[in-house]
Length: 249
Length: 85
Length: 131
Image 1 (cartoon, one colour):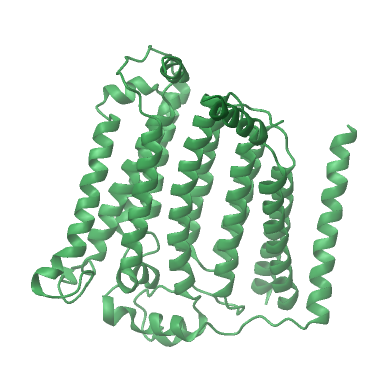
Image 2 (cartoon, one colour):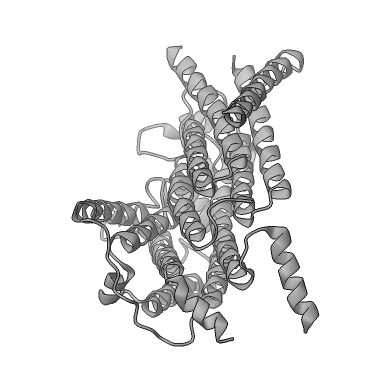
């Protein structure tokens, strides 16, 4: 009991110090909150509909005004996941022993929740140029379903469905190829590499797709989802296989 | 006027709660409990991000920090030791 | 009132960052170091978005919704979209690097049998010295 109350005492004194410092700073230094955003932000908000035909300023900055930064960031993501998968490969293929998943109540609940999460993930990813969202949150949400399915149904059932790690890595490679193609295609007509409205149409069949932004969001969604699902698969291979591998040298 | 005060109270409560969660995360010996406290701190930061009118970031931050980091930490803890020191 | 909340914001973010740095330097378990690293980077992201926040009453995200005459309203009352775009990139890169660190921690545990930083380094150095 003494250790618990010592932590609580330290915590309460920390909170008191924080609040009193804030009071002192706000009274003595006359801190004033800023009243308007910077001029560069105002330029982006004022011109985003005309330059990129997308009413969402953040997606327009991420994929159009500063699109090259995002392409490089996708490359960094790819390298990091490749490094992680390279550490945890096993030389020979073994069949996993059959294990038992969780109870049927958990399974039914997981089935419903996984369906909901998958629907929401697709919606977030494909509406990225109209509302807040985009490729990254959608891909992460879909990867969460993989991390949910593996403990509840076992890993073997996921592999039986055909979702092996090789296929996930192949999907990731194809999605990244698509991303690179969308970025490089304008070079055919002599424009620079990551251009949006001068090459791609802004409306297709009456619907607003904002040029290449929709395609970028879709390919990024596939790449992120399959990359992190592969990470989840490799993380849940049981430890005995690795111990045998290390003992054999 | 009451809306302004409600937003300011929300910000204050979320900030102080995040200090509590960070303190408990750093000083906890059981790593599984530390992972849960870290998820609580992420929820407080997501409330802050929503109150600062950044919905894109709040959505990404929730999916990544509460979803993926917690699952990743539970996987790592189950393969290594559970208690620190 | 708003001055107090702004000062509290800055003080709380500084305290969280300092606690995160304390966790990285002075805690011995590798997993605790990883958790403290995520706390530090999240605090820095929130501090960046605080730069683009205006303390007025109706603050809205920088998204058009098709209403007439919205541009003037958004120029006055919207939050800054540029720090949000930078933080989005930062979150994704942080996630990838933390996943790589997690794989590294598991591999160190397999090779040395411990996740204590000092003991693991000692075991690895002894193995190298033996060769």
